[in-house]
Image (cartoon, rainbow, N blue to C red; front, side):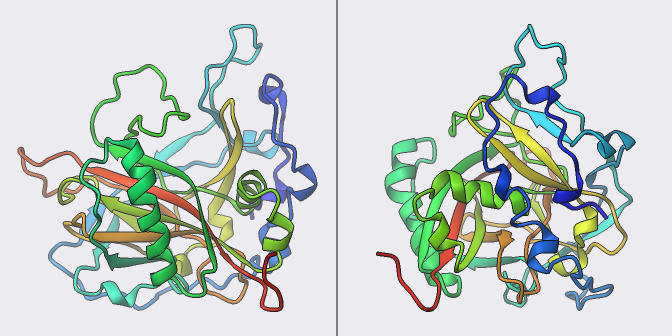
Length: 341
């Protein structure tokens, strides 16, 4: 089994960067410390009835390498200095999994919940008109998202937006993506992944809410991404979501995501026949997907949701490329016996 705390980090490729310093907290949110190691995997969960819109796709998964026994998986999103002896930007090896069914949940959206499955669908009409206007995103859309999470998600006392990203299925006309530019679009992510590992979640808390972190750790902490199509209905590369009940931590490998500003920790999925995948066919801009990335509550079934984009086979020649926006949030429930000052 591969847990974050069992992988020894090789810092040779990080010598040129100021690695974030919460080393004492590295294992604080490891699966074993939160009681997640014995996570029960549901072999054959109840699924929606077969639909004519069910798709068969081969998703991209991480392939385990012996290298990872002594060097942690990593990916660098900044230019490596020419003087660095090691010029690699990653040590990740991916492969296509076996054909899997992407079950269409159209008409059964209400059967999927954050606490049980790790994802949920809700309807929401935004006042946003132009998603290329970053100021409008900050002043109109982000407050909408905060309000929606407080309205739709159970037990929310505080929401902190820490990132947002626009994705388009269009070529990127640059040699390297500037991850510091939130408005530079990214391509749909077609590898099975979860944006934060448990240790990565703690790192995000320490980075974005440093003065409140100790208090907030006494309550419930979640990371929830809010994903929606923009401009038009999705016909190509819809978002596939894996039922959390069918994924074990042994199916996930933690990897360092390195930029000049921050060293984060994500998880990549490895193929397993137990996984059950779902998607919402022809998802419209009024249909929003909540994706759970992390949950510190040991009593819920779903602590994360592995997800990926896939190419829909029924795509006409005049289909518009997928465009979407994803808001990444820290979501807190205060400790029951106290409130912040």
